[in-house]
Image 1: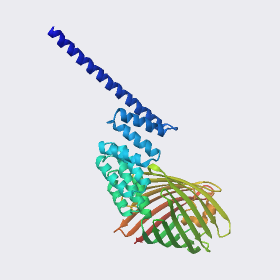
Image 2: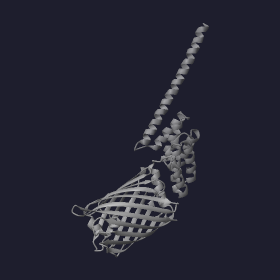
Image 3: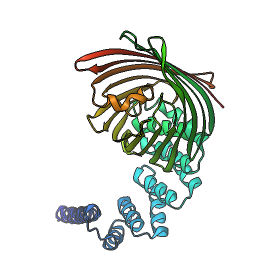
Image 4: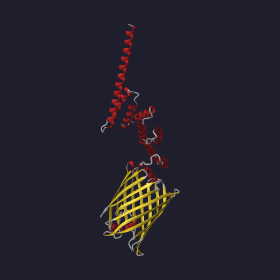
Amino acid sequence: MKNLKTLHTIVLIFCVFLFSHQNTNAQKIDTDSLLTVIIKDMKSARANYKLNVERGLLGKKLAPDYIDFHLALGRNYDLLKVEDSARFYYNYVIEKNPRYEDAFLYLINMDLEDKNYNEALDLTHKAIELFPENRIFRLKRIAIYSLQNDTQNEAKYLKSIRTKYPNDADIEQRLYALYSKTNMDRVGAYYNITTIDRKGVGPWHLASADYMRQRTWGSLIGRVSYAKRLSSDLVQASGLQFEVESYLYAKRNNYSYLDVAYSKDSAFPEWRLGYSYFHNFKKGWEADLGVRYITMQDNSNLKTLNIGVGKYFGSYWVNLRSYIQKDSPSFTFSSRYYYKTKFDYITLIAGYGTSPDDRTRATEYDTRMSLKSYRLSAGYYRLIKNRYVFGLLITDNEQEYTKNGFQTELDFAVILQYKF
């Protein structure tokens, strides 16, 4: 009898345990299903954030220790622009379980929107310590420095993480843009000699001096150029050209290029006007659209539309630009490998047709547009002692001058600049 009573007690305890365990599992399944519904709705085009808040509050009541419901509540309040509630739940998630990366990211984004840069910076420091392999928090830190116009810390941090992500196109693109906005002035000199293998033609000389003022808004360049073209040891054409160039930064990802040049001498076109609009996309992509307008000394006018696309591949930059002009298109493919700063790179350029941006051959642009030409350039540029920029560019241009008749034009160009 005693054994039977003991057996009944054991069976009763087992039934209670089984019922309780089934209840717990059912609740877990219900809350998981509820969370899945919330997440699915948030991804839809017609998401109902208010309903998701109600669902999240119910889920939190059923499973108060289920952190995912608090994160979902924070996100839906965030999307509803109920900032106090969103911040409360994000902070709750971070306090209870700091391994939730999304909570850090959402909270940093809120601080950026509200221009709470110091708070956002503190959060990125914590997030980078917790998630050292997550690249996005490092990029957020860079963005904060940029929004604060703290170019010194932005440049310092970009350089420090460049070794960690040597093939990151975004970092290279940001570094180049940052160098382009750093306050500096430069004075420079340029000289190019062109030799031509056709008897009695050449050489051609082109020299220029310029001054550039670079600020966070962009840059302004003034340039004076002198050209002299010889034929059978006689001066065929010579003269001066006066030019102003400018790069203007409108928004973070956009900038414009302007160019105006004038000459009254036969060695240059009378007027050269240029404009291009550039837009930087994600993952190192860039595109540009522009026009060129050239008035020759005989008052003939030439118009060109140019379209270009570029891409950073780690420390490599490549660009393809097409000039759509009257007789035949021109194409230029440019590549660079940056091994230190913006001023330290090796370049290789290939092209077909005559480009309106080729200053060496600008005075013959109208006659060369309908002729074939194939060119290849190689160059080396280096920053010395952080002050002096030295560059060397060699170009081989195979130029058609009569039907199926070609001449070889070799350019040897040297550039020297001093930045301060």
